[in-house]
Image (cartoon, rainbow, N blue to C red; front, side, top):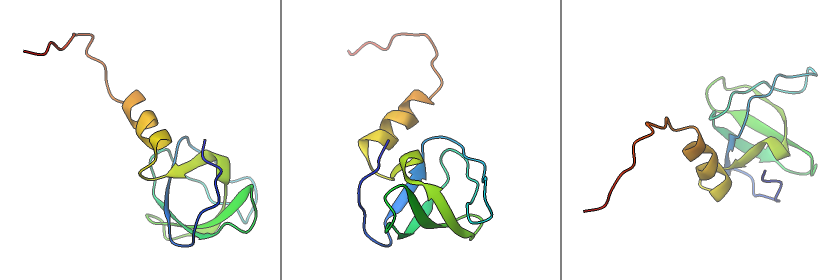
Length: 89
């Protein structure tokens, strides 16, 4: 999971759900979108949750850059599988 230094204003997407454990944390679901406000602490980033508009801390290793390979791999794993092979013609 992505724990790279980022710049203020970049968008992150959770790779899994998280339930807040402290008043300063925010809960989120897999696939929510968040804007990074501060990455001063390497393990916990201050973000703005773009749906709830809440500001708080999230574990940095639970989120990935919105357009990152990690995020795309997680999205692909979540797609329904029909079990049918697709042939190229």
